[in-house]
Image 1: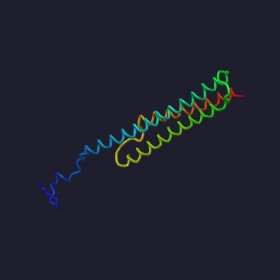
Image 2 (image 1 turned 45 degrees about the vertical axis):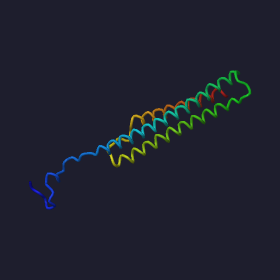
Image 3 (image 1 turned 60 degrees about the vertical axis):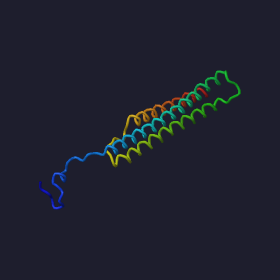
Image 4 (image 1 turned 45 degrees about the horizontal axis):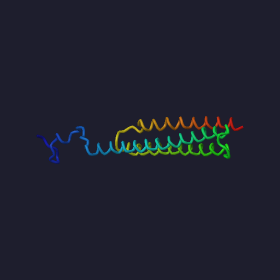
Length: 145
């Protein structure tokens, strides 16, 4: 067998594909899955805030305006509901941004996509929630006047 000038067989110095360390691959997979779980927890929490805010703003507003609940300002549930919706949307966008930038940092060392199914779900939920809040505000503004 021929050797190079460092007494290493030439077969070992060729540009053969490097074997990936199984431990590193598993650690990368666990990290990506943990980041997805964290984002989905943000989606779940934000969706709860958005749904509760919408319910409070719409349902309680309707109860007050029809006279079923007395002694409460008509604007109070609307303001509180919109505040909860804004908090939910902010948490959702913050969690999505945190996930995106964390994956982008990992992308420097590994070939992975910055977009995942959970990030797509978070983006779609955020867009729907924003449209829902705008629709709610316009609907409540028309009924208050």
